[in-house]
Structure formats: structure tokens, C-alpha cells
Image (cartoon, rainbow, N blue to C red; front, side, top):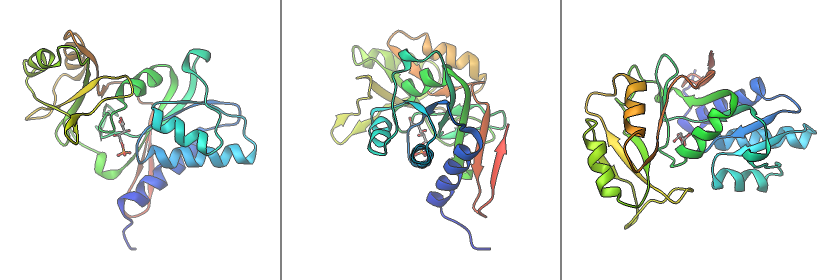
Length: 230
Ligand code: 5RP
């Protein structure tokens, strides 16, 4: 059988997750990124079919895409909880721990994930790793104020922090903050401790480690199969 490309895998994973996890009447968290893009389009199909869904967006870009496709967006402050959030990830380990934030939306994504009964992650197989931090750098969102000092603190945690740029200017998140992409030479050990240590540095707003937050991972493979890990 011919192999499918990465974009086709993203579409398969995103659509499968919506089919499996979204039910009529739910409040749904919409992730951010190129895999979540297919989630949002599939949710829009359900809305067109008559499903009564309220959605919370994890970024301005996802909110815009959702509204353009007829999805009702509500403020996270106006719901008691989110039934299910479907979002992408940059790395997924065997225990379903994650690195997120290469798309720059990690802060809102983490707030929405924490408000969700189920956090469902959609990925193609290239995102699977044995150890977190071995493939990608860890994004850490920091306040603009004093960010160079904050980066010293990040470095003391054993990584090489690089300020994310967009053209000639630092990349600015939806929250108005900067991101340092932190490269850990041999991956990240003791994930919960590292998350606490990073988040305790003055100036750090949030890091892209999502530990013990995932209820299920929907993985699309090159051979066209889709696996659900729970
Ligand atoms: C954005 C994210 C994305 O979910 C993550 O970067 C995966 O994106 P994509 O599906 O485009 O590979 O965390 O902040």
C-alpha cells in the first residue's frame, strides 16, 4: 500500500478524534496548529449537521478559523468546564506526556487543557518519541520585561535558550509575551520537577511541558491507519 504524506496523516488524526470524542451538546476546546486545523473543519461539519456545540479557542488564529466556519465561540470564563479539547503536540512520549508550543499558543492551550475533562491529542507518527525533549526544543513563554535575565534562569536549568524570532523582531504570543525555545542536550529528565523549576523562575509565564494532562492520543501512521492510545 502507498504511504500517505504528513498532511494527510494530520487530516486523518484530526477527523478521527472529532468522530470519536465529540458528542452533541458538548463544550469543545479547539486546539491550535496545522493538525488542529482539520479538527476545526470537522467540528464545523458537525455544526452544519445540526450539532449544538459551544467551543473555546486556544488561540486568536483558531478562533478566527472557527468563526469563519460557522462555529460558536464562547469565552472560557463563561463555561464551568470544557468537555473535551482536541489539540496537536510537538512531541508525545509513551506515557502521553507532551511538548507543546512550537505554534506559539502553549499558554492558552495549557489553560484550556486544565479546564477540560478530557484532553485529546492529535498527531502524525513523526511526533512520537521515547523521551521528551530529544527531538524538539521546549518552548517557554516569558514576560517581555527583563526577558534576558529570565533567560539566564532558564540556562541554569540545563538548557540552551534561544529567543524565538519572527523576521527581525521577537515573536510575540497572543498574550503579548516572548518565547524562548530551550534545547536540552539529552532530552528532559524528571518532567514534573523540571516543569515546576522552570515555572518558578521569575518572568516565566508557562512552559510547554504537558505532564499527566492527556486522556487520549490519536496517532495517524504513514500506512493510513489511525491508532487511539488511552
Ligand atoms: C501550538 C501547538 C501545536 O499544537 C503544536 O505545535 C503542533 O502543531 P502542528 O499540528 O502544526 O504540528 O502546541 O502552540
